[in-house]
Image 1 (cartoon, chains in turn green, red):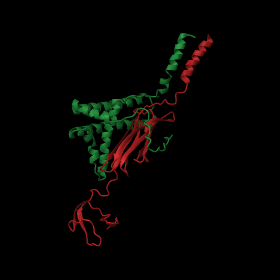
Image 2: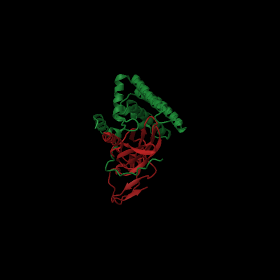
Image 3: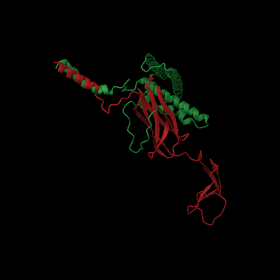
Image 4: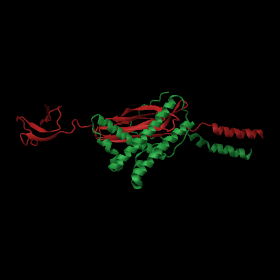
Length: 178
Length: 183
């Protein structure tokens, strides 16, 4: 047998595991910074939204309203800056998504298209821009504190499933609708 | 010679066409579950989210909460492009550690693939008191009866005053034999 063919066959067999484990799109082994901060800033907005909802119902909103400041160890001014920047970022990313969903609903959006890549880039740039705003508002030392808090508390999973603890009963897992 | 080439090509083709091992899984998207116990509203509140940022897939996420006994309750779910998830609020009926887990799927070529789960936990101290603020007895009449033992045969009106009293029940007295009287 021709040596080159032998090498080709050998390499093909060696590459089999990588071929099988490659996802159809990106395969993130680490969470990009913009994804981490997008989730964190969304969490900041979520706390405010839930607190507003409680307040509208005449309930005590203090716990949710002050959670971020208390657990991140921020000053009142830093908290106000964080909430404002998070609200602005969330408004922009939500608008991007709404526009993309409208295009998708009209059937004009194709996965993997230039339009899809543009949306991904737009979302990424929006969040990265707001990270820069946080850095400017907090200063290097205080931003480092916030950044540590973000990395410690925002747990985004991209790995294998977490097994259900043995003490918990297995729920029915409904199949998604076609 | 032709046979050798044929064998070599067959080896390459076979290697590429062999089915992937069963344990090979693809994890392509980002999922997060977050839960806190809010003592103000006596609720475990949070959210679960699942997103791919590009709209490449149709996504589906749904979640359950488990109480300290291991029993589960459905919290909700959603299905959409770009991102899926929901907020939730659950009023605990016992104290202890509650577990929230979301299950995530993405759809590719009309096939749904399980894409892992995300888990979080919140600890609840227990049911909210019936009255908030809790009753604070600041005085009784006649004076001193708040600490003295009840005596059989003794009959007199008891006055209690303070703050935080509700209307049901107004007053509950436990007799020496364990009998409870409510007025």
